[in-house]
Image (cartoon, rainbow, N blue to C red):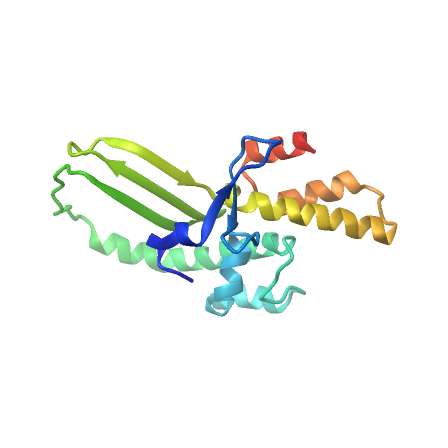
Length: 195
């Protein structure tokens, strides 16, 4: 966990020669995964009662480092946020009508946001000129952050299956692993073609 303004101190973009897709690693050279499984590895004890009941009846335990666990983590989050949304809707409706009291004056500067999106951590930086016009944008998507880890997992999974002599339906199993990462559709198609 680190101050979001320092994200470039912790992650770096790397170039790979076989694709134009952006890839990222930690500065210490390790790959990483963002998304539902990463969030629940840190906060699974904060799940609502209904999601906890499902978790307790399932084989998965947190922390979980298998990308296949990401699908279960997504289901747990859907249940949790559906339950949470019901109580939040009433609170939000009680605030209406409301008016924004924030006045905006264009000026030069850099804005950074690090937020959790459904697929994982989303980083974006915007640089504005003195008229408030956007001069540059850098968006680092969850899928881009996961690609290097996905490729490492695919390699390790293939080696594991070959060592076991269990290569039946190998392509299907690798496709399942890729889908467990929940990449965006264009990235999923690009990954399948690259292999």
